[in-house]
Length: 274
Image 1: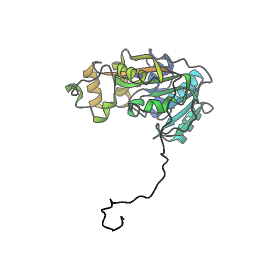
Image 2: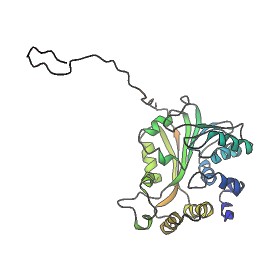
Image 3: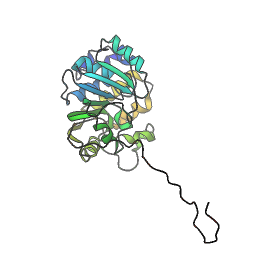
């Protein structure tokens, strides 16, 4: 079954050993296929500083450094950065992959630090909030590029979840959206100009190949994706360039001054207020 990971559509990703890829599974999609597909639409150059947001076990981070020569800050809130550093070292990438544990909503970087930000099969789980793009975009230089790729929708679900998806669908999957939805969400912010928003051709086949390789017992998902046949479920890619519009600093504290005041109204009884 690991032969399914040798996909001619993604020659860079297919050069990596299936055992290495499977040992680094951290999500529901092939991280290298998605990263290679995303990078086809992103102008990465050697030496760029790249944030890999929600990197999981840092397979995408290692791939970015090895294949494109960029310096990668591999950020995840859940996975152990020490393990990710060891993985990067074993892959000969420790000089260009810098793992950290951090929450996407509280990143420890200076404004304008990154040339590019990528997020592989992660962004929908925290990025649908209309305020989030503003908090993230401030870390990009003007003209820098933001790109996401992962599970999404070919078109928005209007109304109830379709019957053929209900056995698999859980409430958290309502974070999945179409490329058109993401384009509108980003474009209206004024913080990025969207240059690509599309779905992966033959994405259904790649989704099934991955699940049949790493989780063949996951029949609810496999059956749902097969039955859907691309009607709703899709791999989605969105890429935008940072505009010069200012991004607001997030509010982390509100400065106030306390002045003691009477608690109750005075009733004219001569009894002082508390």
